[in-house]
Length: 452
Image (cartoon, rainbow, N blue to C red; front, side, top):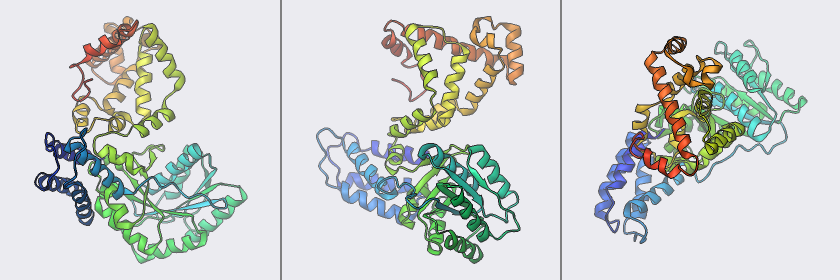
């Protein structure tokens, strides 16, 4: 998300370098570029006007500290105003209620509401140690109830069964009674979506809201609809008091207009970002971290949290031991490293959070992407256990068999073997304090933007 906006802002701020002070003249053109960048990112016009006015007011005439360039000073101002636009801090779910705390999920059809219910159930169970029950009040969409049941089984949440001939309000109240009897901490209520906001939809969800009295009413909206997402959330909020927004499909949204518009237009905080179909692809929304990513400064805190949750510590220590001893680096090690990376959101997810990657991700993704990594894993999986542990035995006939098993050409097997051999050599160089020497050798041989 925000790829194009990050590129535009980076180029704009570079133009101020070398000047000793931010003035009316040099800020005028810069702010025009910032305005265009935001409009191209599909940020709502009133939000753009307000943002640009606030930045300009703070920036013009500001004395630049001796250690800062005008570009750096402007980055600081833009960063702070982006945070202010999206909300000062992460707003967690308010679950401080007599159990079960009811969370009502609402949204239009196709926004990913049912999947979000499962993702939220998984997050609450794993990170907050809550007992979670889920229920579907969607009696209109074919297989909606079955879909939620399948997802609930997948994430280990308690599923309350419902039938399409029941009234949605009755389903919700019965589920609440069951959640109380089973001493559940949280009840997530999935409601029916519509293609657009209508009176019938609003009347139904208002009845459910009144019946279960939720502590949180979350509006699930597709980020790819841009500023329309903010307008839809506003219209919905006027009919039903929302407590927050969940922005979905952010992995497919390169512009980010919804994230920058929703808070200011609706007055409601974005509480979560959904990225992808996987049930663990839901993250709390941190405005300050997202602002850093927009400005190409990465998101180290989220990256650290991701590593802590997804990296196999035992496996990492085992590999670290090989690094210290200069031991062999076989295909089992290579496969483990690629799988760890995929568990952390893939190459795109990692690069997005790494500082200094703004404007450079495209060039790296052109060279290698998640599909390439999955293909490499498939090649290794086509090898026998002996071949993985002893790569040197892989010769002509074995290469043909491995390539056929993975559905690739022999050249790709050769390429992977070459990469494994290079990594093995690197590890040997790192033994006995050869790390600095290896870094110097790597200079200029890395993909664009990855130079040390």
